Image (cartoon, rainbow, N blue to C red; front, side, top):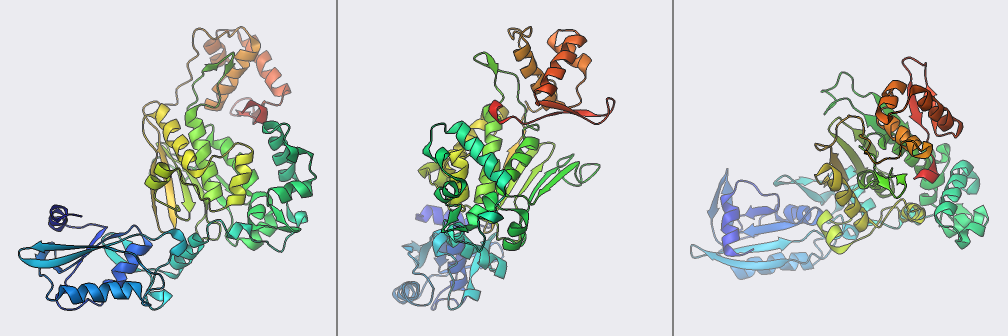
Length: 478
């Protein structure tokens, strides 16, 4: 920060990354709170020799600059703090008075919390002030410091406490996308050991999250569940009811993914598009949402009192992750940085090609969503969470999907693709509406629907009048 930037800072009312202290003859007692707060959050500039009264800054200067600088740097390099804190120091002359600027960096996640004298003296930055960290916030900082460690620890559970249906489903998915992989020849026990789901006959914490039965999950993670809500408005207060659909999954992460994604995939526009001779039901905007869901599941802090949560509003989709990011989103995108909170879970999803590394995954979210909705996802967060928000753009209407003129709708397979896409968009669409859209008679549509039902791709829920269609997930069509 140069002199002009400093003066500009002093002319503004509040800065989250900027704090002034008088320090005319001695270091102020509350200076250590600010050092701790900057270290534990996003870093910032600490300016000594300036006083603040209301919204007015006065240049007081420092009477003995050599002593003040020595006392401050000695404390940071000594035993006052639990970590050695590297700082950048700048000296300024303003109105013939000396002031100091010290840049306090945010330390890495593995070095937090930073505190002086005792852990109860850990502070965080909120707005433009320092706040003593709560017990919950301190616990969150400690958990963040153990990235890539906790989920590899062994629990008391064995393979018998894992859900066989989940394991079988995962192995089938694995085989489909990794044909010829040598893991396919392994027994279940050897396969799970290769994924680090088990180590020496004990299930790891990551393995339990991935494939665990409900009771072991509940006993190990006291607040374990994953929320999904559909809200008819832009807020809880905006709609006629708080939500129209809620899924609270207490199942393992693998099964929860498919339950939630099945609902989410119907809330994103998927216009019909030919890829070769077939319809494309995996466009970039849908991939962006899938990546965000996987990101939430593999990076959430399952020891937090906060739970992972997906909320679908009329104007946006939000993914809420307990636990902070290991670095700023700017650094993650710039460096392609990858440090998953739950690496065993992350690796399992990468094996079946449902996840990328954290850096490339965020690129897929940003580029995929922006390619269709013309706006970038917004990422916000604090010391113990981050939120990814996808806003629907101008193309996000509930109108029927237009069928291009060149689609060979006289071919049953192509027509069936269109029917499934239309029903995924509007599950109450009628046979006459489909007939008009596809330019065929009702009898043809009825025959197509019967074929789809017989193939297990479609079913009717409820009565003929008042009921709705439901597209049944088929992994081979992904």
